[in-house]
Image 1 (cartoon, one colour):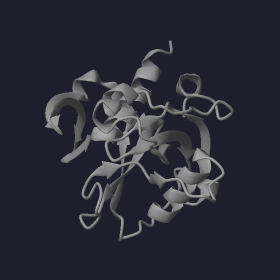
Image 2 (cartoon, helix red, strand yellow):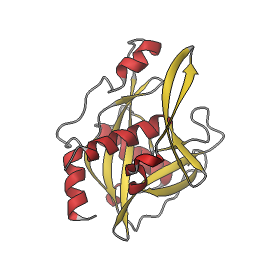
Image 3 (cartoon, rainbow, N blue to C red):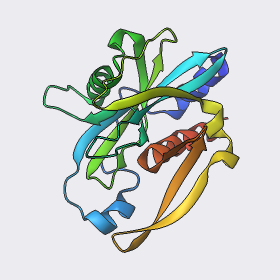
Length: 203
């Protein structure tokens, strides 16, 4: 990645020695519906890969057979397990299990703030550089497709869409990034927006 963007990214994220702690930045919105019960810890990996001098973000398309988030675009990740030392370990493990990318190809360098989901998780996003020579081997039980989207697409405010829905009888604002026939929305879009806002704050 370029020196300038590398500098901005590393200033925008939380350092690895400064991991975020719950509650999530959207806790007030979620607790209004779910209450203050403990959320299950989870981690996702926001992997950035350089292509021809431009950064791209790695995504998965979930299979239609899953009981949760079927057919949705998401980051690799999932619930933390007892053997996971921290969110970085969980994100790397889940990425390897879901899309077959080895840990030696990933170089985590920071975090975003925690985010709470309507499914009862508190998610720690881990941001990492991904070797452009990686080859994805998705688990067909979980992942239908692995694809990349240029980071610049998310930095363009014209590509962010908002809509309001009624969820459990209460209005909620949902973010969408429609891209090439796919819709990146919900928690994934909200975490992307968190990264975008952090980058925009860095001059």
